[in-house]
Length: 452
Image (tube, rainbow, N blue to C red; front, side, top):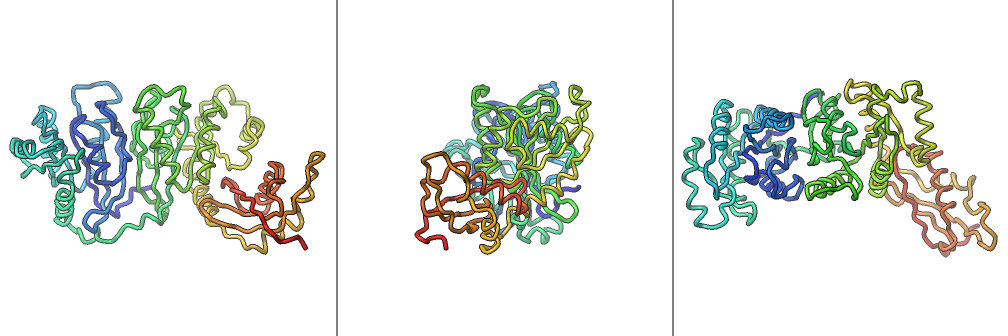
């Protein structure tokens, strides 16, 4: 597996709390990175593809550089920053107009000189003309003219875009970057689950490098992180997300924003990989995440992680465990289930074949004639109802949409349709169509036609 090389990379670097994520969001045009008034909020790299002056670029946000910390998390943050700088085509160093040049700014500048790459100094929080005029000290960093911006008031961003485009134009072989990146052809895969089930470990194993920070501390990943890559001729966007936990377990604003981003990631994904912990089985929080996936009509692959170290179930076979999941929650029978180890890589790559199949299922198009032949043999009108309840006439069915997959069944009396009818219809559709892992939405509509 290798990273996609279609577009140049512009990496945002800076010490904590200078506004890197705010600039990332401003350049991208939407809120994707978590932005709160708390130092060190961004830990992993966050990537997205944007268009700047007619060119596609990969914009990369990084954690705040702070060499005073020596704990494991901050050391891994530093590794992520160095990795991003090594891969970058252009580096965007963000500083703070209000606080001026700080020791960490000088330390970062010293490191950047060793990379011999184009560096643009963006001086954030230049919120007025007085602040804008006072940024001359940033010439001392040695990267030419500092560029005053204000993410809060959106000042200087248009000019900064042009400067970024100019730096890309000066890159060797820059012509290859003029080709528009067709993101629509990429399969977007979101990896979701409760905190600490192994989402980041799975991403790192898939990419064969430490793309995101892995830690046994729950909540390490706070942003939804996009990685663009290719594998065996197919293009993907892999989205690692923060753990989704029940609202009663949410402790602070960062958790709230992170969970919001995770839900947004599900909405923009094509396929969702839901990770379960093999030792814990299916939990109420897992079912809540599955609710979000189904509500958004996304194809889903359920991945039972940590299968290699689930000591309590070592005598249980895969098939027995699969049946156990089905007994615990009958809904799980509608989804493909695979057993993996994100740590060792067992069965990880095969998940991409399943993701391809699931993505193709979202584009399923079924003729009205075929659908109605299914229900000619299996008429929902024949279902026995409780005493006093009159059965509606189910007249005909059509497919009304793809992505999400939706069908409309026309009946004479919609008010007489009960949940058992909907379950019957869904089961017959799944028996006759390749829709394993794909939520089905069934709409009941009134028709004035009578059954012949």
